[in-house]
Amino acid sequence: MSSTSKPAQEMPLDPLPLAQMAFSFAPARILLTAVQLGVFSHLADGARTAEEVARAAQASERGTRMLLDALVGFKLLGKRKDAYSLSPLAAKFLVGESPDYMGAFWETDGLWEGWGHLTEAVRSGKPAHAVFELAEAEKFFSVLTRTLHVQNSLQAQRLAQAIGAGSAHRGMRVLDVGCGSGVWGIAVAEADPDARITAQDLPEVLGQTKKYLEKHGVIRQYDYLPGDMRQLEYPAGQYDLALLGHIVHGENEASARNLFGRLRAALKPGGRLAIIDMIPNDERTGPPFPLIFALNMFLHTENGGTYTFAEYTKWLTEAGFSRAEMQEIGEGSGVAAIIGYK
Image 1 (tube, rainbow, N blue to C red):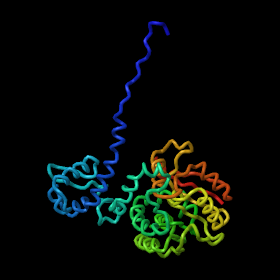
Image 2: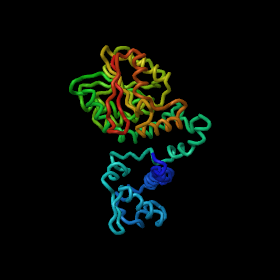
Image 3: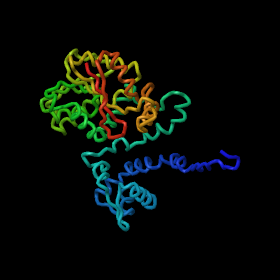
Image 4: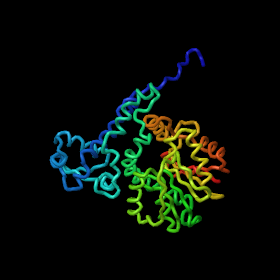
């Protein structure tokens, strides 16, 4: 460069993305407040104006109008003059009377309050609220499963297709570990009426599982194994497939390895273990949601987190599985199934 040449001008840094990130809690709070006030149900029941919704919700008209307008901005509601209406998404998933209602877990502020203690938790290294402890787990998961059932239904159907339920593999014996609502096993049962599935979870949770099995018309395909998955010894060589649907993120490495070994023993020769979870890439640089969810586990468990495909492959191999592969089922969200082969 000559002495008279000018250096290339650097582009000015824009701080706006930082301001937007710092304020990105607002959409979550708007959604939670709308669910807790029953806004979507009131609209489904015939309320149309801010005044009518406010009256039904026993809330202020001014605050209700601003809340409704914000929901319009997020395309959860429509608006024409002073009348509001439900979007198809809100009508299906946010109206309390809908069979696909997924707002049960948002009716209280447990998740919100936990994230409010992130700074304290990072400093101390201790969870804000250890919901995976047995004393808390039955109550917590009885509510959470109502939301997760709807949230995971489409992914469960993709998994059933990916593992060949009802096509390449018919009449499988399946163990659904920590089954919750049973969403992962239900998708297998619906794809293959000859499949036989054992639902395993805490006794209080299994009571709720049975309601979902009845709703989906598959209860005759089911057996039950109540108890703590960390303590149970599963019958040896009985199953073609074991399912761990969003379970491992609540465990530490030692617990996960122990569980994989016990489940391998429960599988028939050639059997498979399907681990469904949020999977960050091996460098832990993305996708965003598995990285965010790792912090969620930090806030709510003593040792939980999200694990990479490389980590799962190592743990499965050392537990005696011959190989592992990954199947995307979350369309870019980072949700995937890790399949281990005995």
